[in-house]
Amino acid sequence: MKRRLRATELILFCVVALALVGVDLMFYFWPFRYREVHPLLQQVFRSRVDVQKYHRTYFPHPGFVAEGVTFYRHGDTAIPPLATVERMQVIGTWTTLLFHPHLLYEIQLTGLHVRIPPPGTKARGMDFDEGVIDTSQSELQIETIVADGTMLDLLRHRGEPPLQFRFLRLEIRNVRANQAFQFLTRVTIPGPQGTVFASGSLGPLRTNAYGATPLSGNYGLVGADLSRVDGVSGHVAARGTFGGTFSGVDVRGRAEIPDFRAGSAHQVRMSANYEVVVNGTSGDVEIRNVAVKSGNSVISASGSVAGSPKKVAVTIATNNSHLEDLLKIVEQSDPQVEGDASFQAKAEFADGPGRFLQRLRLKGNIALDHVRFTKQQTEDSLDAFSARVRRDPPDDPKGDPPEVSADAESQTHFDRGVAYFPDIRVIFPGARARLHGRFNLLDSQIHLTGQVALEKGISHAATGWKAALLKPLTPFFRHKPAGAVVPIAVTGTAANPKVGQDLLHDK
Image 1 (cartoon, rainbow, N blue to C red):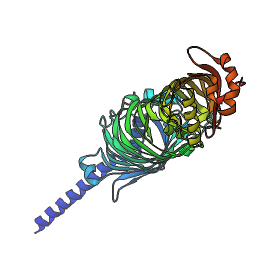
Image 2 (spheres, rainbow, N blue to C red):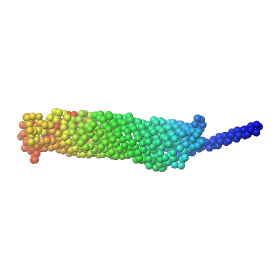
Image 3 (cartoon, rainbow, N blue to C red):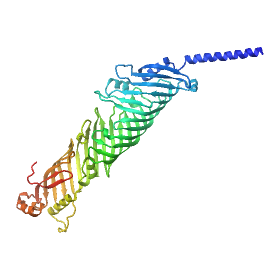
Image 4 (cartoon, one colour):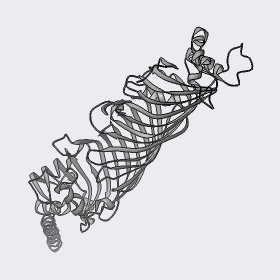
Protein backbone atom coordinates (compact mmCIF):
# COMPACT_ATOMS: atom_id res chain seq x y z
CA MET A 1 0.00 0.00 0.00
CA LYS A 2 2.86 2.34 0.87
CA ARG A 3 4.54 1.56 -2.46
CA ARG A 4 1.30 2.24 -4.36
CA LEU A 5 0.73 5.48 -2.45
CA ARG A 6 4.26 6.64 -3.19
CA ALA A 7 3.85 5.66 -6.85
CA THR A 8 0.61 7.63 -7.05
CA GLU A 9 2.21 10.65 -5.41
CA LEU A 10 5.15 10.40 -7.81
CA ILE A 11 2.83 10.24 -10.81
CA LEU A 12 0.78 13.20 -9.58
CA PHE A 13 3.95 15.14 -8.92
CA CYS A 14 5.21 14.40 -12.44
CA VAL A 15 1.87 15.37 -13.94
CA VAL A 16 1.79 18.64 -12.00
CA ALA A 17 5.43 19.30 -12.84
CA LEU A 18 4.82 18.62 -16.53
CA ALA A 19 1.72 20.80 -16.41
CA LEU A 20 3.66 23.64 -14.80
CA VAL A 21 6.45 23.23 -17.33
CA GLY A 22 3.85 23.14 -20.13
CA VAL A 23 2.17 26.26 -18.81
CA ASP A 24 5.53 27.98 -18.46
CA LEU A 25 6.50 26.99 -21.99
CA MET A 26 3.06 28.03 -23.29
CA PHE A 27 3.44 31.47 -21.74
CA TYR A 28 7.03 31.66 -22.94
CA PHE A 29 5.99 30.85 -26.49
CA TRP A 30 2.54 32.51 -26.18
CA PRO A 31 1.82 33.89 -29.67
CA PHE A 32 -0.15 36.88 -28.38
CA ARG A 33 2.62 38.49 -26.37
CA TYR A 34 3.15 42.16 -27.21
CA ARG A 35 6.79 41.69 -28.17
CA GLU A 36 5.62 39.10 -30.72
CA VAL A 37 2.51 40.88 -32.00
CA HIS A 38 3.93 44.41 -32.34
CA PRO A 39 6.80 43.56 -34.74
CA LEU A 40 4.44 41.30 -36.70
CA LEU A 41 2.01 44.19 -37.25
CA GLN A 42 4.84 46.47 -38.39
CA GLN A 43 6.18 43.81 -40.76
CA VAL A 44 2.84 42.92 -42.30
CA PHE A 45 1.69 46.52 -42.80
CA ARG A 46 5.12 47.97 -43.67
CA SER A 47 4.36 50.71 -41.17
CA ARG A 48 5.29 52.11 -37.82
CA VAL A 49 2.61 50.95 -35.39
CA ASP A 50 1.88 52.86 -32.16
CA VAL A 51 -0.31 51.15 -29.53
CA GLN A 52 -1.68 53.03 -26.50
CA LYS A 53 -3.00 50.05 -24.53
CA TYR A 54 -2.45 46.31 -24.84
CA HIS A 55 -3.46 43.26 -22.79
CA ARG A 56 -3.72 39.54 -23.37
CA THR A 57 -6.90 37.51 -22.92
CA TYR A 58 -7.15 33.85 -21.88
CA PHE A 59 -10.79 33.05 -21.14
CA PRO A 60 -13.08 32.18 -22.70
CA HIS A 61 -10.83 32.56 -25.76
CA PRO A 62 -7.10 33.17 -26.03
CA GLY A 63 -6.04 36.35 -27.78
CA PHE A 64 -5.36 40.02 -27.09
CA VAL A 65 -6.93 43.46 -27.10
CA ALA A 66 -5.09 46.53 -28.43
CA GLU A 67 -6.51 50.05 -28.14
CA GLY A 68 -5.53 53.31 -29.79
CA VAL A 69 -3.62 51.69 -32.67
CA THR A 70 -2.09 53.99 -35.31
CA PHE A 71 -0.38 52.83 -38.52
CA TYR A 72 2.13 55.29 -40.05
CA ARG A 73 2.86 54.27 -43.65
CA HIS A 74 6.50 53.26 -43.99
CA GLY A 75 7.23 54.89 -40.63
CA ASP A 76 6.71 58.42 -41.96
CA THR A 77 4.94 60.44 -39.25
CA ALA A 78 5.06 63.68 -41.28
CA ILE A 79 2.13 62.58 -43.47
CA PRO A 80 -1.38 61.50 -42.41
CA PRO A 81 -1.40 57.99 -40.94
CA LEU A 82 -2.47 55.08 -43.09
CA ALA A 83 -5.08 54.00 -40.55
CA THR A 84 -6.24 54.31 -36.97
CA VAL A 85 -8.13 51.71 -34.94
CA GLU A 86 -9.97 52.48 -31.71
CA ARG A 87 -10.01 48.84 -30.61
CA MET A 88 -8.54 45.67 -32.09
CA GLN A 89 -9.57 42.36 -30.54
CA VAL A 90 -7.95 39.14 -31.74
CA ILE A 91 -9.83 35.95 -30.83
CA GLY A 92 -8.39 32.44 -31.06
CA THR A 93 -9.47 29.05 -29.80
CA TRP A 94 -7.62 26.69 -27.48
CA THR A 95 -7.86 23.89 -30.00
CA THR A 96 -6.28 25.86 -32.83
CA LEU A 97 -3.74 27.35 -30.43
CA LEU A 98 -2.46 23.85 -29.60
CA PHE A 99 -2.59 22.32 -33.06
CA HIS A 100 -2.56 25.35 -35.43
CA PRO A 101 -0.79 28.17 -33.58
CA HIS A 102 -0.76 30.44 -36.64
CA LEU A 103 -4.53 30.23 -37.22
CA LEU A 104 -6.74 32.98 -35.75
CA TYR A 105 -10.47 32.48 -35.43
CA GLU A 106 -11.54 36.12 -35.66
CA ILE A 107 -10.29 39.71 -35.59
CA GLN A 108 -12.75 42.41 -34.56
CA LEU A 109 -11.87 45.99 -35.54
CA THR A 110 -13.80 48.83 -33.96
CA GLY A 111 -13.47 52.41 -35.23
CA LEU A 112 -11.19 51.60 -38.16
CA HIS A 113 -10.42 54.75 -40.20
CA VAL A 114 -8.32 54.40 -43.38
CA ARG A 115 -6.94 57.39 -45.30
CA ILE A 116 -5.73 57.19 -48.92
CA PRO A 117 -3.57 60.18 -50.01
CA PRO A 118 -4.38 62.28 -53.11
CA PRO A 119 -3.14 61.02 -56.50
CA GLY A 120 0.34 62.17 -57.42
CA THR A 121 1.54 62.69 -53.84
CA LYS A 122 4.56 61.01 -52.28
CA ALA A 123 2.40 59.03 -49.87
CA ARG A 124 0.14 57.74 -52.67
CA GLY A 125 3.22 56.66 -54.60
CA MET A 126 4.50 54.71 -51.62
CA ASP A 127 1.15 52.99 -51.21
CA PHE A 128 0.73 51.79 -54.76
CA ASP A 129 4.34 51.51 -55.95
CA GLU A 130 6.03 50.09 -52.87
CA GLY A 131 3.00 48.61 -51.13
CA VAL A 132 1.76 49.05 -47.57
CA ILE A 133 0.98 45.39 -46.82
CA ASP A 134 3.32 42.41 -46.97
CA THR A 135 1.88 38.99 -46.23
CA SER A 136 4.09 36.96 -48.54
CA GLN A 137 6.37 35.71 -45.74
CA SER A 138 3.75 35.56 -43.00
CA GLU A 139 2.42 32.21 -41.79
CA LEU A 140 -0.55 33.92 -40.15
CA GLN A 141 -4.00 32.68 -41.19
CA ILE A 142 -7.23 34.45 -40.27
CA GLU A 143 -10.65 32.86 -40.56
CA THR A 144 -12.72 36.06 -40.26
CA ILE A 145 -12.15 39.81 -39.98
CA VAL A 146 -15.15 41.90 -38.89
CA ALA A 147 -14.78 45.67 -39.33
CA ASP A 148 -18.31 47.08 -39.24
CA GLY A 149 -18.35 50.87 -39.09
CA THR A 150 -15.09 51.31 -41.00
CA MET A 151 -14.50 54.69 -42.68
CA LEU A 152 -12.40 55.10 -45.84
CA ASP A 153 -11.30 58.62 -46.82
CA LEU A 154 -9.93 59.38 -50.28
CA LEU A 155 -8.03 62.61 -49.63
CA ARG A 156 -8.03 65.33 -52.29
CA HIS A 157 -5.86 68.27 -53.25
CA ARG A 158 -6.17 71.93 -52.25
CA GLY A 159 -7.80 71.17 -48.93
CA GLU A 160 -11.04 69.90 -50.50
CA PRO A 161 -13.16 67.67 -48.26
CA PRO A 162 -12.28 63.98 -48.71
CA LEU A 163 -14.50 61.51 -50.48
CA GLN A 164 -15.74 59.40 -47.59
CA PHE A 165 -17.01 55.84 -47.75
CA ARG A 166 -18.73 54.37 -44.67
CA PHE A 167 -18.74 50.60 -44.40
CA LEU A 168 -21.87 49.77 -42.44
CA ARG A 169 -20.84 46.13 -42.74
CA LEU A 170 -17.46 44.69 -43.69
CA GLU A 171 -16.61 41.02 -43.30
CA ILE A 172 -13.52 39.34 -44.74
CA ARG A 173 -12.93 35.59 -44.68
CA ASN A 174 -10.08 33.18 -45.37
CA VAL A 175 -7.14 35.57 -45.11
CA ARG A 176 -3.99 33.63 -46.02
CA ALA A 177 -0.70 34.49 -47.64
CA ASN A 178 -0.69 34.31 -51.44
CA GLN A 179 -4.39 33.40 -51.61
CA ALA A 180 -7.59 35.25 -52.48
CA PHE A 181 -9.94 36.14 -49.65
CA GLN A 182 -13.72 36.53 -49.72
CA PHE A 183 -15.54 39.68 -48.66
CA LEU A 184 -19.05 40.85 -47.93
CA THR A 185 -19.83 44.53 -47.48
CA ARG A 186 -22.50 47.21 -47.31
CA VAL A 187 -21.08 50.69 -47.86
CA THR A 188 -22.50 54.19 -48.32
CA ILE A 189 -20.87 56.11 -51.18
CA PRO A 190 -20.54 59.91 -51.42
CA GLY A 191 -21.51 60.70 -54.99
CA PRO A 192 -24.18 60.04 -55.92
CA GLN A 193 -24.99 59.33 -52.30
CA GLY A 194 -26.36 55.82 -51.92
CA THR A 195 -25.69 52.36 -50.54
CA VAL A 196 -23.75 49.62 -52.31
CA PHE A 197 -24.01 45.93 -51.45
CA ALA A 198 -21.11 43.84 -52.71
CA SER A 199 -19.65 40.37 -52.29
CA GLY A 200 -16.84 38.55 -54.02
CA SER A 201 -13.16 37.72 -53.80
CA LEU A 202 -10.00 39.83 -53.77
CA GLY A 203 -6.41 38.72 -54.18
CA PRO A 204 -3.93 37.34 -53.86
CA LEU A 205 -2.54 40.77 -53.03
CA ARG A 206 0.24 42.05 -55.26
CA THR A 207 1.95 44.04 -52.52
CA ASN A 208 4.41 45.84 -54.80
CA ALA A 209 1.90 46.37 -57.61
CA TYR A 210 -1.60 46.84 -56.25
CA GLY A 211 -2.97 47.52 -59.70
CA ALA A 212 -2.37 43.87 -60.65
CA THR A 213 -4.40 42.49 -57.72
CA PRO A 214 -7.37 40.49 -59.11
CA LEU A 215 -10.93 40.84 -57.85
CA SER A 216 -14.41 39.72 -58.87
CA GLY A 217 -17.95 39.61 -57.52
CA ASN A 218 -21.48 41.00 -57.62
CA TYR A 219 -22.89 44.34 -56.52
CA GLY A 220 -26.10 46.26 -56.09
CA LEU A 221 -26.79 49.99 -55.67
CA VAL A 222 -29.88 51.32 -53.92
CA GLY A 223 -31.12 54.76 -52.92
CA ALA A 224 -28.53 56.73 -54.91
CA ASP A 225 -29.65 60.38 -54.88
CA LEU A 226 -28.62 62.38 -57.98
CA SER A 227 -29.64 65.68 -56.42
CA ARG A 228 -26.11 65.94 -54.95
CA VAL A 229 -24.89 66.25 -58.56
CA ASP A 230 -25.41 69.89 -59.51
CA GLY A 231 -27.97 70.31 -62.28
CA VAL A 232 -29.71 66.93 -62.21
CA SER A 233 -31.96 64.97 -59.87
CA GLY A 234 -33.43 61.51 -59.51
CA HIS A 235 -32.85 58.20 -57.73
CA VAL A 236 -30.74 55.39 -59.14
CA ALA A 237 -30.88 51.64 -58.53
CA ALA A 238 -28.40 49.30 -60.21
CA ARG A 239 -27.23 45.70 -60.17
CA GLY A 240 -24.39 43.90 -61.91
CA THR A 241 -21.05 42.13 -61.78
CA PHE A 242 -17.40 43.17 -61.69
CA GLY A 243 -14.10 41.47 -62.39
CA GLY A 244 -10.53 42.07 -63.46
CA THR A 245 -7.67 43.72 -61.62
CA PHE A 246 -7.62 46.69 -59.29
CA SER A 247 -6.27 48.97 -62.03
CA GLY A 248 -8.83 47.73 -64.57
CA VAL A 249 -12.14 46.56 -63.10
CA ASP A 250 -14.67 45.54 -65.76
CA VAL A 251 -18.08 46.59 -64.40
CA ARG A 252 -21.28 45.49 -66.13
CA GLY A 253 -24.86 45.97 -65.10
CA ARG A 254 -28.21 47.66 -65.51
CA ALA A 255 -29.43 50.88 -63.89
CA GLU A 256 -32.93 52.30 -63.44
CA ILE A 257 -33.80 55.97 -62.84
CA PRO A 258 -37.60 56.31 -62.59
CA ASP A 259 -37.52 60.08 -61.90
CA PHE A 260 -34.60 61.59 -63.81
CA ARG A 261 -34.67 65.34 -64.34
CA ALA A 262 -32.07 67.64 -65.94
CA GLY A 263 -32.47 71.10 -64.45
CA SER A 264 -36.12 72.15 -64.74
CA ALA A 265 -36.88 69.86 -67.70
CA HIS A 266 -39.46 67.09 -67.67
CA GLN A 267 -39.18 64.22 -65.22
CA VAL A 268 -38.59 61.10 -67.31
CA ARG A 269 -38.02 57.44 -66.68
CA MET A 270 -34.63 56.20 -67.85
CA SER A 271 -32.81 52.88 -67.84
CA ALA A 272 -29.34 51.89 -68.99
CA ASN A 273 -27.29 48.82 -69.75
CA TYR A 274 -23.61 49.58 -69.36
CA GLU A 275 -20.08 48.24 -69.48
CA VAL A 276 -17.32 50.40 -68.01
CA VAL A 277 -13.75 49.86 -66.86
CA VAL A 278 -12.72 51.50 -63.58
CA ASN A 279 -9.12 52.21 -62.60
CA GLY A 280 -9.11 51.76 -58.83
CA THR A 281 -5.74 53.48 -58.42
CA SER A 282 -6.73 56.74 -60.13
CA GLY A 283 -10.52 56.72 -60.15
CA ASP A 284 -10.62 57.14 -63.95
CA VAL A 285 -13.46 55.43 -65.84
CA GLU A 286 -13.47 54.16 -69.42
CA ILE A 287 -17.03 54.04 -70.78
CA ARG A 288 -16.96 51.18 -73.25
CA ASN A 289 -20.64 50.91 -74.04
CA VAL A 290 -23.75 52.45 -72.51
CA ALA A 291 -27.25 52.15 -73.93
CA VAL A 292 -29.68 54.61 -72.31
CA LYS A 293 -33.41 54.19 -72.93
CA SER A 294 -35.99 56.93 -72.42
CA GLY A 295 -39.50 56.30 -73.63
CA ASN A 296 -39.14 54.40 -76.91
CA SER A 297 -35.75 55.89 -77.76
CA VAL A 298 -32.24 54.57 -77.15
CA ILE A 299 -29.06 56.65 -76.92
CA SER A 300 -25.68 54.91 -77.01
CA ALA A 301 -22.54 56.39 -75.46
CA SER A 302 -18.84 55.67 -75.10
CA GLY A 303 -15.98 57.72 -73.72
CA SER A 304 -14.22 58.42 -70.44
CA VAL A 305 -14.34 60.14 -67.07
CA ALA A 306 -10.74 61.02 -66.28
CA GLY A 307 -8.30 63.62 -65.05
CA SER A 308 -8.10 65.77 -61.95
CA PRO A 309 -10.62 67.30 -61.59
CA LYS A 310 -12.67 64.70 -63.41
CA LYS A 311 -13.86 65.58 -66.91
CA VAL A 312 -16.53 63.68 -68.81
CA ALA A 313 -15.86 63.22 -72.54
CA VAL A 314 -18.25 60.95 -74.44
CA THR A 315 -19.46 60.20 -77.95
CA ILE A 316 -23.24 59.86 -78.06
CA ALA A 317 -25.44 58.65 -80.89
CA THR A 318 -28.98 57.58 -81.64
CA ASN A 319 -30.79 56.33 -84.71
CA ASN A 320 -34.47 56.96 -85.52
CA SER A 321 -35.36 57.86 -81.96
CA HIS A 322 -38.56 59.70 -81.15
CA LEU A 323 -37.85 63.42 -81.18
CA GLU A 324 -40.38 64.11 -78.45
CA ASP A 325 -38.62 61.62 -76.11
CA LEU A 326 -35.33 63.46 -76.54
CA LEU A 327 -36.83 66.94 -76.10
CA LYS A 328 -38.47 65.93 -72.81
CA ILE A 329 -35.01 65.25 -71.36
CA VAL A 330 -33.83 68.84 -71.92
CA GLU A 331 -36.96 71.03 -72.33
CA GLN A 332 -39.18 72.45 -69.61
CA SER A 333 -42.25 72.91 -71.84
CA ASP A 334 -44.09 70.14 -73.62
CA PRO A 335 -42.50 69.22 -76.97
CA GLN A 336 -44.16 71.09 -79.84
CA VAL A 337 -42.86 68.77 -82.56
CA GLU A 338 -42.75 65.04 -83.13
CA GLY A 339 -40.86 62.85 -85.54
CA ASP A 340 -37.71 60.75 -85.83
CA ALA A 341 -34.25 61.96 -84.81
CA SER A 342 -30.78 60.62 -85.52
CA PHE A 343 -27.57 62.22 -84.36
CA GLN A 344 -23.94 61.60 -83.53
CA ALA A 345 -21.98 64.02 -81.39
CA LYS A 346 -19.00 64.42 -79.09
CA ALA A 347 -19.92 65.84 -75.72
CA GLU A 348 -17.94 67.15 -72.76
CA PHE A 349 -19.34 67.74 -69.31
CA ALA A 350 -17.14 69.88 -67.09
CA ASP A 351 -17.14 69.65 -63.31
CA GLY A 352 -17.98 72.79 -61.38
CA PRO A 353 -20.87 75.15 -60.56
CA GLY A 354 -23.79 75.84 -62.86
CA ARG A 355 -26.79 74.05 -64.24
CA PHE A 356 -26.45 70.79 -66.12
CA LEU A 357 -27.08 72.33 -69.55
CA GLN A 358 -24.70 75.23 -68.84
CA ARG A 359 -21.80 72.81 -68.27
CA LEU A 360 -22.52 70.67 -71.32
CA ARG A 361 -20.43 71.13 -74.49
CA LEU A 362 -21.48 69.26 -77.63
CA LYS A 363 -20.61 69.18 -81.32
CA GLY A 364 -21.99 66.89 -84.01
CA ASN A 365 -24.60 66.23 -86.69
CA ILE A 366 -28.35 65.84 -86.42
CA ALA A 367 -30.99 64.62 -88.88
CA LEU A 368 -34.77 64.84 -88.42
CA ASP A 369 -37.34 62.88 -90.43
CA HIS A 370 -41.14 63.14 -90.65
CA VAL A 371 -41.27 66.16 -88.33
CA ARG A 372 -44.70 67.54 -87.54
CA PHE A 373 -46.00 70.17 -85.13
CA THR A 374 -48.03 68.79 -82.24
CA LYS A 375 -50.00 72.04 -81.96
CA GLN A 376 -52.84 71.56 -84.42
CA GLN A 377 -53.14 75.23 -85.35
CA THR A 378 -49.47 75.44 -86.29
CA GLU A 379 -49.61 72.18 -88.21
CA ASP A 380 -52.74 73.30 -90.09
CA SER A 381 -50.95 76.49 -91.15
CA LEU A 382 -47.97 74.48 -92.42
CA ASP A 383 -50.28 72.06 -94.26
CA ALA A 384 -52.15 74.91 -95.95
CA PHE A 385 -48.92 76.71 -96.83
CA SER A 386 -47.51 73.53 -98.37
CA ALA A 387 -50.66 72.98 -100.40
CA ARG A 388 -50.53 76.52 -101.84
CA VAL A 389 -46.89 76.53 -102.92
CA ARG A 390 -46.75 73.06 -104.52
CA ARG A 391 -46.31 72.87 -108.25
CA ASP A 392 -48.59 69.82 -108.24
CA PRO A 393 -51.37 70.73 -105.80
CA PRO A 394 -53.44 68.14 -103.86
CA ASP A 395 -56.19 66.31 -105.70
CA ASP A 396 -58.96 68.04 -103.78
CA PRO A 397 -57.98 71.70 -103.38
CA LYS A 398 -61.38 72.58 -101.89
CA GLY A 399 -61.04 70.06 -99.08
CA ASP A 400 -58.68 70.07 -96.10
CA PRO A 401 -55.04 69.90 -97.26
CA PRO A 402 -53.27 66.65 -96.44
CA GLU A 403 -50.96 66.63 -93.43
CA VAL A 404 -47.34 67.23 -94.36
CA SER A 405 -44.09 66.58 -92.54
CA ALA A 406 -40.61 67.99 -92.92
CA ASP A 407 -37.14 66.49 -93.04
CA ALA A 408 -34.13 68.43 -91.76
CA GLU A 409 -30.44 67.97 -91.19
CA SER A 410 -27.68 70.17 -89.81
CA GLN A 411 -24.40 70.36 -88.02
CA THR A 412 -24.71 71.73 -84.51
CA HIS A 413 -22.71 72.72 -81.50
CA PHE A 414 -24.05 73.25 -78.00
CA ASP A 415 -22.48 75.65 -75.52
CA ARG A 416 -23.73 77.14 -72.22
CA GLY A 417 -27.30 76.01 -72.79
CA VAL A 418 -27.62 77.25 -76.39
CA ALA A 419 -27.70 75.05 -79.50
CA TYR A 420 -26.23 76.72 -82.59
CA PHE A 421 -27.14 75.62 -86.12
CA PRO A 422 -24.90 77.05 -88.87
CA ASP A 423 -26.71 75.40 -91.78
CA ILE A 424 -30.12 73.74 -91.45
CA ARG A 425 -31.57 72.15 -94.56
CA VAL A 426 -35.33 71.60 -94.41
CA ILE A 427 -37.45 69.84 -97.03
CA PHE A 428 -41.23 69.55 -97.10
CA PRO A 429 -43.74 69.27 -99.95
CA GLY A 430 -43.63 72.43 -102.04
CA ALA A 431 -40.58 74.06 -100.48
CA ARG A 432 -36.93 73.73 -99.50
CA ALA A 433 -35.39 75.93 -96.81
CA ARG A 434 -31.89 76.72 -95.60
CA LEU A 435 -31.72 78.32 -92.17
CA HIS A 436 -29.19 79.26 -89.53
CA GLY A 437 -29.53 80.46 -85.98
CA ARG A 438 -29.87 79.22 -82.44
CA PHE A 439 -32.19 77.55 -79.95
CA ASN A 440 -31.79 78.45 -76.25
CA LEU A 441 -32.75 75.45 -74.14
CA LEU A 442 -32.60 77.49 -70.94
CA ASP A 443 -35.49 79.80 -71.88
CA SER A 444 -36.81 77.94 -75.00
CA GLN A 445 -36.26 80.98 -77.27
CA ILE A 446 -35.90 80.20 -81.01
CA HIS A 447 -34.13 82.44 -83.51
CA LEU A 448 -33.66 80.98 -87.00
CA THR A 449 -33.46 82.89 -90.25
CA GLY A 450 -32.76 81.99 -93.85
CA GLN A 451 -34.39 81.46 -97.22
CA VAL A 452 -37.08 79.18 -98.53
CA ALA A 453 -37.35 78.12 -102.18
CA LEU A 454 -41.00 77.72 -103.23
CA GLU A 455 -42.22 75.68 -106.19
CA LYS A 456 -44.71 78.49 -107.03
CA GLY A 457 -44.49 82.27 -107.00
CA ILE A 458 -44.36 84.38 -103.84
CA SER A 459 -48.02 85.37 -104.07
CA HIS A 460 -48.97 81.77 -103.27
CA ALA A 461 -47.22 82.02 -99.90
CA ALA A 462 -50.12 84.09 -98.52
CA THR A 463 -53.88 84.26 -98.85
CA GLY A 464 -56.45 87.01 -99.32
CA TRP A 465 -55.32 90.62 -99.56
CA LYS A 466 -51.74 89.68 -98.63
CA ALA A 467 -51.54 87.51 -101.74
CA ALA A 468 -52.82 90.40 -103.84
CA LEU A 469 -50.20 92.75 -102.42
CA LEU A 470 -47.41 90.22 -103.03
CA LYS A 471 -48.40 89.51 -106.62
CA PRO A 472 -46.65 92.61 -108.10
CA LEU A 473 -43.46 91.51 -106.28
CA THR A 474 -43.37 88.11 -107.94
CA PRO A 475 -40.71 89.04 -110.58
CA PHE A 476 -38.34 90.24 -107.85
CA PHE A 477 -38.37 86.89 -106.03
CA ARG A 478 -38.50 84.61 -109.05
CA HIS A 479 -35.52 82.27 -109.08
CA LYS A 480 -34.97 79.37 -111.44
CA PRO A 481 -35.58 76.50 -111.10
CA ALA A 482 -37.74 77.48 -108.11
CA GLY A 483 -40.89 79.50 -108.39
CA ALA A 484 -39.62 81.99 -105.80
CA VAL A 485 -36.94 82.38 -103.14
CA VAL A 486 -38.02 84.44 -100.10
CA PRO A 487 -36.59 85.22 -96.66
CA ILE A 488 -38.07 83.25 -93.77
CA ALA A 489 -37.81 83.46 -90.01
CA VAL A 490 -38.65 81.08 -87.18
CA THR A 491 -38.98 82.94 -83.88
CA GLY A 492 -40.89 82.75 -80.63
CA THR A 493 -40.52 79.92 -78.14
CA ALA A 494 -40.65 76.15 -78.28
CA ALA A 495 -44.15 76.32 -76.83
CA ASN A 496 -45.31 78.99 -79.30
CA PRO A 497 -43.13 79.05 -82.45
CA LYS A 498 -43.81 81.58 -85.21
CA VAL A 499 -43.04 80.50 -88.77
CA GLY A 500 -43.51 82.73 -91.80
CA GLN A 501 -42.02 84.91 -94.53
CA ASP A 502 -40.15 87.95 -93.23
CA LEU A 503 -39.13 90.35 -95.98
CA LEU A 504 -37.56 92.85 -93.62
CA HIS A 505 -35.83 90.45 -91.22
CA ASP A 506 -32.13 91.28 -91.07
CA LYS A 507 -31.03 90.00 -87.64
